[in-house]
Image 1 (tube, rainbow, N blue to C red):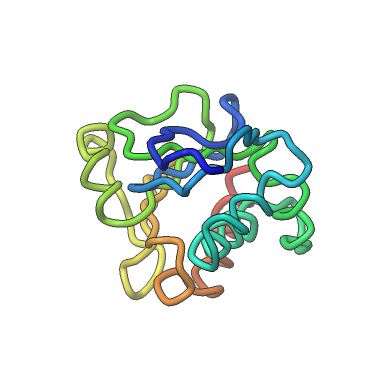
Image 2: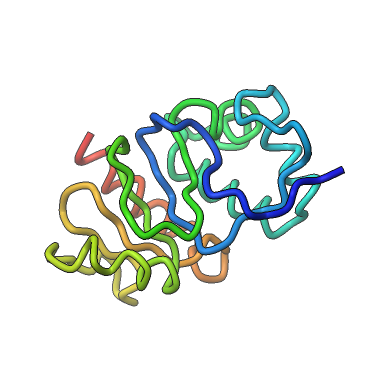
Length: 159
């Protein structure tokens, strides 16, 4: 049995990386972000779309190049949180990833005073030069490995 997708938050409430998304996955009953198989449960329940989202998150936040192991064993347990359909930035997160146009529009009042600069030639990856990124939707067509690498470089320069 599965819970509806009315959930507003996934992952660790005190996470340092927060991803803002417009819609939630279907969450299995009794799911908890700290469970050893938490990510695989979401992928099994929701399929390839959420596998891509969680994979891109892991590629961005993994401490090294072992993103697959990180995704399957650590993602959402301590350092990442997903906020769904949010109108405010997390007060706990150090890094904010506002994902896609819908979330960027929803959080406009939170970010309208920051000056964002484009980090890539296509204008898909924006940063306020500090802790907030406006990023494409977490899908490989919109957020390819080249942009993921650029995002990681920006994070490493600021850490």
